[in-house]
Length: 350
Image (cartoon, rainbow, N blue to C red; front, side, top):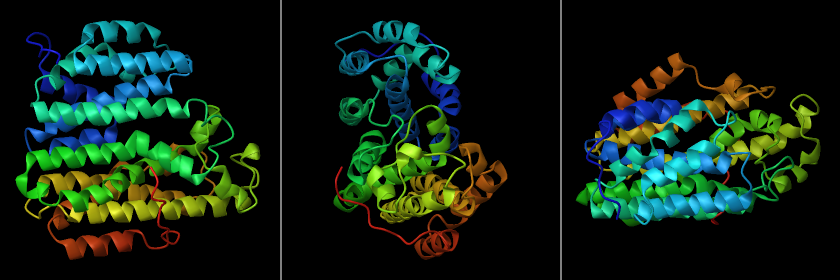
């Protein structure tokens, strides 16, 4: 195992600086978690973002991405120095990589040094689940290009690899943190994927036109073929009426995942207010994003349907008021979800 760093920036301050650049919503939600769980979850998210940076780089071919992801995992195992990994990856990042992600990679030595400071069990959890992500991501190299994924099962597998596994990782961290939560492990584990996959599918639908302009499409061809829409002719302006039934089906599946995510959250003991709040903020913001997508069928970018800051503050405040009241939370969810397409049970595959 890699030895903890004893020099360099304060790890907690560094993570607090890096988080807002790579995720506005998680930068707000993670500090709500109890200490020291907040630092472990922040670190887990930053490790996942390093993996995402490798996956998303358009200038790297599949063999190069596999090599870098393997090098990253070797770094987490302690067989490769973190400084060597950062020095290898950072020069490969160009202007296509957002500045915040370049900054994260530049600080990877210190981020991974923070990982090394955690308990043995915490390190095992992070390594196991980041490993699933890094090994799974190359499956989809090129498969999301231009014409979409072949079917809903492939989309489900993709969402698991990049996000459902995060729900599983969080569950293990929660159970490690709290013996009482650990007594509910089996029930939470059955819903953990939906927590991550609901958030990922929300982002895919929000950003679908931005991705399309970059030559990427994560939509499933079979869903749209079933309603007579050919993703080869995907266009943000033309034939949107024919596109809408396929979009509505995906909204319904995402809605189902978010309902499962609420059930997952309500399995947390009521006194675990901070962890519940972390989950509820994420679910609430995703649900209101779905509402905006459904209400704006002609949207042309993620910015068009992103939840505005004022609305986000109200969503978080409402979640805070109802954090321990399961009945009220279910009522609030149903009220916020009114008008969304009918809930469709997602497939059980990964």
